[in-house]
Amino acid sequence: GSLVNWLVLNLAVEQRAQDALFEEISASLDGEDLSPEAFRSDAALPYLHAAVRESHRLTPTLAVSLTKSLAVSADICGYRLPAGSIVALEALGAPNDPDLVENPESFMPERWLPDAVNARKGTPSEVIDHVLFKAPFSAGARMCPGSRVANLELLIIVATLVKDWRIELADEERERIQTIQDIDYYAGLTLKPVRMPKLKFTAR
Image (spheres, rainbow, N blue to C red):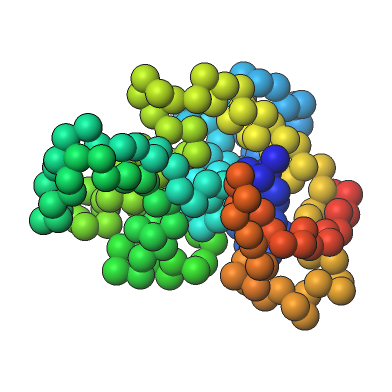
């Protein structure tokens, strides 16, 4: 799906992050095979969870979600919205705002590790840690009922790929793609690359 596509692309473009993820997976497994138990908590494999979160910040699966119609008028951040107004959560703006995020065009999973999250508390940048920006599955009572299964599948697929393969852009793609912003995308049901770049997989 789109979550896997974008995360694999981000790791292929940003080899430094892929190397850090491989080191974490290798150290955590210590020669053992991957199992679902390794992914039960965010405390296990924190860099993997941070990479997923960073990929969703930089290349969200859904650019707009949680569309609602206001039953009554509301004042939001100084704006008066009459009843019947359509409001939606837009997932690209704030998480990629240079006033809130340092080097927003860079894929940096480190910004989601506990020390970095704690450092944002009490600052305007804290808004990017809001639960509704965390994943495309929403939150609370209306959270996607399949979110736990989808997230576990994502973690296992990506961890297995990175454990067994070095993932790189194919040679013919490297001149065209220097950063993830060089990959054109379109908004269908989800955000997808206009053309999925060719990748090279080398066994580790």
